[in-house]
Image 1 (cartoon, rainbow, N blue to C red):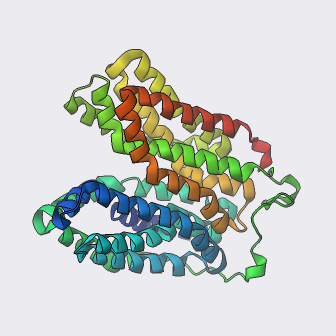
Image 2 (image 1 turned 180 degrees about the vertical axis):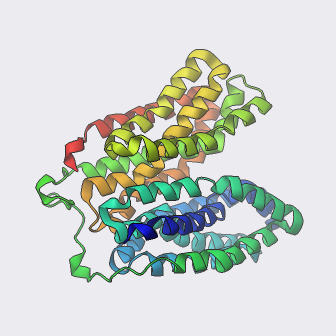
Length: 393
């Protein structure tokens, strides 16, 4: 793919990803309670349905990646625009728990194929080993999904109710997301036998066969992404509660929490500027240290160090989002990227599904001491990354 077509494609895919994230992953934050009230259900059942969607997305990911490996991103991501619209329309018409579960089941299928991993695989099919800058560009744009999505969901819910908000998002997928994904350049079809299998005990796929990654590399990445995304999702759900438990005021907790989003964007800008000259493994190690270092500052100095924690955690999380796409590419190369990426990322989707519930129980038991658990998970991820070497790519 010519460089002149690179950034317009990144802009279009980034905009489509912003819509996909805002209308799926970030939807329950504003609409879960109105949904529960409108359907006369406990709010825990709404969150259970959302967790089910994340688990479904983990199961769908490898198959969607394999389809992108064969046919390219255009048909798969175009299909997810239709699925997102159908899922949101189904949610808008739900009259019971069964309708709610059906809507989120459809959303889970769309999320498994239509969020970052699908977009990353589409770029790798088009740009091969040179896709790192494109992946970073997409995350920079889609990093604004909550900034755009939460106000829109809140406004539509206030004006039209939660059903109207779901219909509005469905319409945007048809009017905006569908044309954006249709604009992805066609990729040549690859015959099934031309797509290499995942690395096994006797084989590993790499961009440079002479420097094949070790057998454990895929397992290491799967663990690292699961551990770090458990922490990220737990913080997204419980950070204000943790800050209040450690002595901050509610207003202060909200203000500190608001720093995470800009810090994520700053981390991605750092990766795009300085860190892109380093191997992705080195950038990932530094990023994974962000949360444990932030926790150390918090525990040593109390709520006054809350902003430092938010910045370190957010910046690290922003860089790790890019690492989910660039590390598998650097270690294994572009062949078979989509399917492999889907398998590597699947455990992190399951971890995300259970993170709010599990970490909430830890907060109930230990209060702010639950941060020791999240810090330990972060440090274990750093240790796992140290098991890999930069000369393995």
